[in-house]
Figure 1 (cartoon, rainbow, N blue to C red):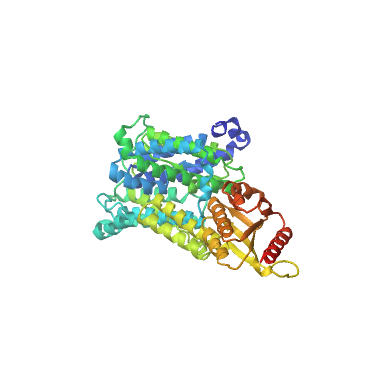
Figure 2: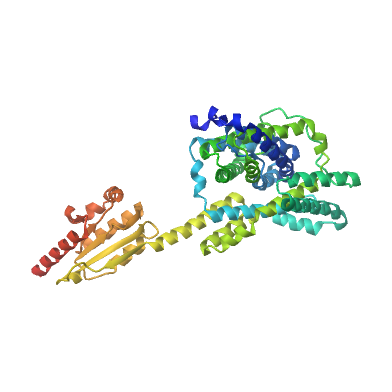
Length: 541
């Protein structure tokens, strides 16, 4: 357990890096502010909840997480999962889901499940990311055309189409202009001055213009001027039962996204590897704490983490400063932030979502292999059409199918010519070399090919080239040996690898042989034994 908890080593470099960590934390805080507000509004729980989540979860994850440069808070992927929960169960359910999911993620860390994210295939991750980007963009369409999303279908794509159809374009002009202005400022700054936080500048500039013009746009509204006191929401059995499914989905998403973000951060920074299990514990505690303060579930945020790394962050002090900076906004600038038009947040999220859909990555995936392209498309389509977690599960299943098919095709059985000068009776001996993998996906095919050969007295099975053997493959070998022996064919086995011998023994392959001496290490002794056996058969005949 000691490896899952904070230690003095977490801050060993602070004496020499505190200045750059301080600047990095302030930079990330500026970037995180508009995103926290936007994700809170977009999820349906409100801007205040998004801000509280960025503060509380950001601080807890920074202290307890497994990455020294990870920045956590509300994210677009989590918004996609939370919006339907708010529609179905109400705003109050989010805090309960946050606590329940937090407990599950902590348990995953304690059970050492952190490395499971490495099993996610690349096309699944990219399809998942593209699907999330599309959903986030579509979620902003109602606000961009001045239509309330309430009462619309919970599917973001359907809701966007319904909103456009129901829009009164004379009323939609104002929000649309604001969205386009924010997007323009962000895109221009990203090209001209990429180090300047474009979302923050865009919101500030457009808000000032809107206030000066006196435009009657919907604004964020009053924010709390202090952090709310922690309190335990209703955790009755009925509530827990109703929200068990959503909590599991949120926990799975929080774990996957946080570990992916930590892995990206580790590849971008030279601060050393991350502790995947501790990262789960830290993110679980972050969501749990956020729920107690009325916030929403949090995850590691790839975009904010990347800003943190690019700003030079070396220790977790930077993420701590980011949370403290956002806390200062609550106490010092809540009244100013409350006047920000909601349409500006939609503009920020639309640009953020568009950046998640990378044409370069799509081209790479689609141009790699047909199976990868299929997995990518299936994952993206199901993400947009149905559910994020279901999409990941189906994407993994499709990827596993293609991988097993490729592995099965790479496996084979080949009949070889007998070495040395041919002698009488060699036509009654067959040497079969089994290559690659003998597992459930290839076992039956190999069994059929060997059994198809008739007129044999001795079969030599060469297993020295066998790389992978599972229980199904070993059982198939046992069936093969038994069937051949029952037909009067003597079976010799050559070259059993040490790691396969135990499994073959347990499943009766060795016992199925006519004699214990029918197990050979070399091919030449096996062939000599087979020829002597055939000579005896010919002599008797």
